[in-house]
Length: 612
Image 1: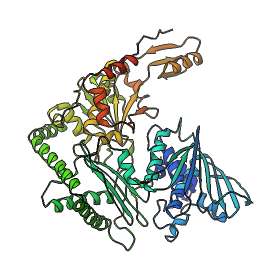
Image 2: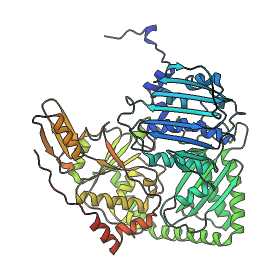
Image 3: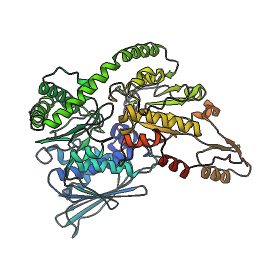
Image 4: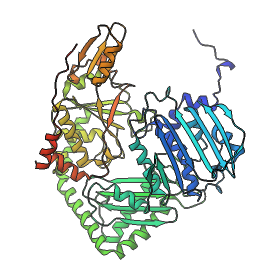
């Protein structure tokens, strides 16, 4: 029977209902806070961007942030919102001061949506504006106006105070990881030298801008003193280190564009062109950029981003009637970098030496690389180790941010995941056993080792991670000694040859349950002994208990519970105070007394937990 299509079939959603029904359109994915791009961090960023824009316009020198349990407060000391417009700014779409380019010439939040999204997606949202000895307070819940207070007198200085609690019916089981918040705040201070941000009393400030960012993110010792170039609306810092691949940090108007965009593409092209002209050599671009670590920041009037989350710049021009992004960056790099290298011959010599080393290594690998590519191409036609998915991260599909690849230990575990996965967004790659320890080896091993070569091809990361095919690379091994060893070997492989995968937050460990506790009415999967004890208490009197000893023991029907909406992932992160070279040398290099002491001090005795 056909459904009648009438005027009543046409419905209009108000702004808050539209945001709450389709939050992905405004903040990307939801998540629970375990990944740095989960929605709760986008809410924080959207609230903070307005304070940053105030600072960029010369108003207010500090921002106070407090995160307690599930509630966030932000207080800036800018000009404050005009008191008669507080309700409009916080609850009317496409309303804000940034449409007037005279007020906010080069800001991030241009579409007037960000703060409204925070409002709509929070169970509690309070905004106060302090302006010229008066304060206006407005309270909301899930976007609905709860109370608009009258203006009252105050002795507090100008600025804005925002307090919100993300709605836990949308962000289930969420919690803020302060290390992700701290990373965000560091980036804000690198881009706004002199700005002070306090997070729960901890101070963040940068004196040298992008130079500080570069020096704090080096994986190993820089091959030469970092080059720092600053101009109107542009800042660049770069150097090379002993590592594989390219590492970039890119920003637009203070926004971290993790996916790059037109400004980063323009820099990469301009850098190669300038180097070729300076040395008067026709050098391959891949050799010039190999091992580079660079930070690029530009300020653009009315920037156009490719999504509401503003992670990739789409603008082609610096301003509506200005130079193209390509020409602006090319002219700047050509003039400033060329002048710098002429004035600093020792750095110019060190840079040329590194480029020539990269060229020699590439040519030495060319034979085995060609053969490996041919093997990978044939294998991709029918790769029995890879069970691919339909959607990929390097596409424009709306589900691209949900894509994952599970790297499993053997065919048994991969079989269960393959049968229970979401074939649209979840791929599976099966290892043949323990991979090689790649510490101290050159990238030649990636092409000579069939498994590594096929994994590299599956991920599509041979040159860099710009066209990575899956957003989440999930190491899925047993939680026993052998499984832990495989995790270490895979992490070593990624750190050695593709460190950007980990630095950019793409690598995770799959957490799987140790126990299943059930009665006739309910089944609980327990990841810790504490969860098991709680389940035993709540499902008594006589629940059935099963201990899972490996992924291969879990049936596909049960696996679907662990890799679906309730998936638990532990991100693989790097400590800022240790270089990759030192890290791998300590844990994966030759045996040393220090490592022996570490192992002895951290021994664990595994015992089977009795099934009661």
